[in-house]
Amino acid sequence: MSEPSPPSEDGGLSRTLTTPKIVFLIIAAAAPLAAMVGTVPLAFALGNGAGVPAMFVFSGLTLMCFCSGYAAISRRVVNAGGFYTYISCGLGRPAAVGGGLIAVVAYNAASAGLLGAFAYFAQLVGASHGLDLPWELWAAAGLAAVAVLGYRQIDVSARVLAVVLICEVGILLALGAAILLDRGGAALPSTSFSAHTVTGAGIGVSMMFAFISFIGIESAALYGEEAHHPERTVSRATYIAVSLIALFYGLISWLAVGAVGATRVQEVATRELGDLFLNLSDDYLTSALTSLMQLLLCLSLFASWLALHNAANRYMFVLGREKVMPAGLSAVHRRFRSPHRAGLAQTGFSAVVATAFALAGLDPYMGLTTSMLGLGTVGIVVLQALACLSVIGFFRNRGDGHWWNTRLAPVLGFAGLSLATVLVVANFDTMTGTTNPVVAALPWVVLGSGVIGVGYALWIRSARPARYARLAGVETRDPAPPEPGPEALVTAGPAHRRTP
Image (cartoon, rainbow, N blue to C red):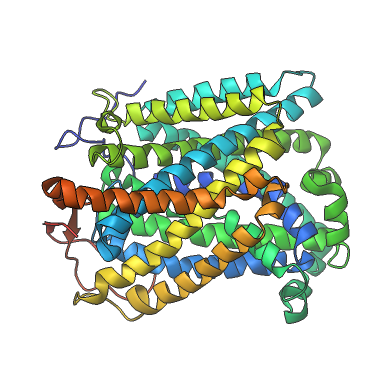
């Protein structure tokens, strides 16, 4: 067994992550197989049918605009604080604290939601193969595994996620190749990208599900303090991950339209829902590979759960270090150089939420998963929109901005993400599958967390000015002038302390 990496020079988190490892962490959080099996059929059924592939392309382009600014600021700011740190750079400390609390709520909720999804599908798959256990036992087993992996250094999680991700992408590519070989050019119907189809009824719902499928793409910045060369690694990983997710989701959903038929896909998806891709596997692959797809679906959900668990850990770690949350959360394990106490706190939160839903007799998927993932989605999309505004503010008075990366792209990203926020909130009952007033009120938790964070920061400014002056302090680097576009991945120059 390999030895844990040595501590970093300042005794902080271990620096073991490379660009490919961070890419695995990001794409695993998006759960490609789970998105195809669970989300795409819903988008077909409730959205604009055959136009769904175009919605993935639109979402990808919008998020590339977000990434242009996000990558530009990541080359100058290296910190494990993600949105918390970046929002502080352009919008100030009060907004940063508000954003930090929204991030804690969003990522913890999303992690708890994936616990429910993993337990639900593990129970179904297990029962279909003769292992019929209550979902609570599957949840407990999964939670224990996530807790152990999250407790250790991030490099271990990255290796596990890489194996799972390669397998789940491989089975989907095999299905896509089989459809293409069988159907030829008809497997990629042009109608999916025609104006009439794309702008048809349900476009808002399809767009909402498309944005949901990209959740986690912004998490690269959380690993800045654990990357070998963060000023290059974070931006590279973000661009690569978003590009791959957009192309992959667009292609596989397009092939599914071709396999079923553009005029029939909405009807068939409404009838089959989660069985759509499994039935396609039976038709175009083999029943044995369908069974493998079922197993990989569970592993895909586990991988996404683990990735979001690690993201939630990093937010609590940084906010504990800043004393916005209890300082004990900022502890670093002496051997693994991991935020182990923050990991235990996240595990405890998920256990409490799952226990509450179990005691209430609620369904793990239609109760726990839809409500918690819905809450997490609202929070993360709001944070992405705020980050776009922060990039504009950060570069406004600097001489190293660029007309596209730090001005126009963030404006376009903010516009698209604002639209996504409105769509997600307006269709929250569709996303969660219930009109329960308690669930319908969950988006207000995001607003409340932000308001509480801003108010708390203003109180600190008044009552503890010295402590306020240290909030969200970051090191900025002055790189060589970047070239426009994703290829502008430059090495940063000297670092200096900046307190926004």
